[in-house]
Amino acid sequence: MSFPAPSTRHAVLAAAALLLVVHGLGRFIFTPLMPLLVSDGQFSTGQGASLATWNYVGYLIGALIAIRWHRPRQIYRSVPLALAVHCLTLIGLSLTDNLFGITVLRLGNGISNGLIFVMVPALVMEWLAARQRINLSGLIYLGVGAGLLISGVLANPPGIAMTAADRWWPAALFSLPLALWGGWVLLRLQVAEPTPPSTHNNGARHSPLLDSKTLPLFLAYAGAGLGYILPMTFLPMIASIQLGTAHPMVQQSWLIVAATTLPAAWLWNHLGQRLGDQRALLLNYAIQLTSVICALMLPGAWGVVLCSALMGSSFLGAVLLTQRLGRSLQPHQGPRLSAALIALYSVTQLIGPWLAHEWLNRGGVLPETLWLGAGALVWSLLWTWRTPSSNR
Image (cartoon, rainbow, N blue to C red; front, side, top):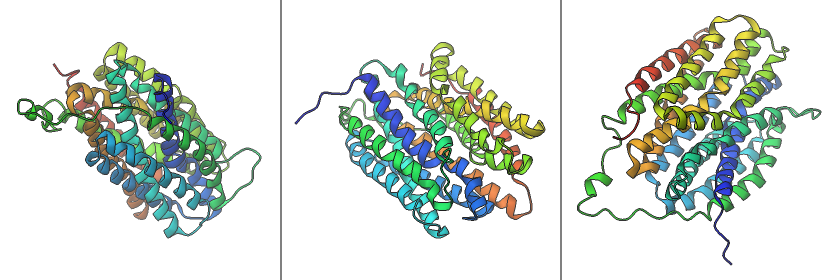
């Protein structure tokens, strides 16, 4: 039995749903869960930082696999498997308090997240480009914003008392129907396989990912991974250190991030079309830098509130603008370029929790690690300034 091809709206919504599942309920739900799980005694703050690092290692592995498996037929095979791994790891996290088991499950969850986060937007972007609708590609990332908002609620559902491993059940159960529907829609998209390279265009098809045009973009994106990951991983934990564990901002900080992330994909998709992706990206990094400086320099709850709002409204824009700008610079190898950018992003963002862990082991305090994020975002601004606005 054959099914009709999805509409553009359904394709974008399905891709957004899959990003909601693997990124919002796989990766970022750990941020609001971490202070709760530390309070439950499941692990310590330092062990939580290590768990975050292992999840990012998995994300890197998934992104590296996606560089190799970038053809549509490989994506069609990999996505269902990655979705199954995601759902199984969340169920596993709901059943164990063993630290080694949690570490292995977070690693596996990161691999599935890396595969989906690279493959699904890349596939849908090519599908939209073939229909002259690539301007809608940024809307795929609405799923990340929705995922953050939902994760903030599911991490500590009102009126439901849970502790330790049980706290993962809401995310696991919420993921299942969305993963099934999104995967079903995605597998119905018809994306043509690239034609074998001929003699006259072989050089173009096998041009290097890094050249004079794309190298500044890659360097800027490297800084972005480190710059955003520290507040996005530890903000509620930093709030609990600065304000006390009973302060409402410990949980509300993540809800502010989530609420401001929800419209971010639409906002930066629009700004990219209006200003140009390169100029919009400069503005984006300036806002991210301001958010980190607020957390470092402003006392009390104000710094946490402004960091939450500014980072939530900006970090996702860097992802969609960089992906689209990269494709404009090398349109002949969009999925491969997308995978390479995400792999680099994941390398630098896994360094953040590792550095935080090392700093804590040496007697430092978690909020001080944000200085590293500020420096990384200055780096991103400088290299974005040197990135061409398009492939001319």
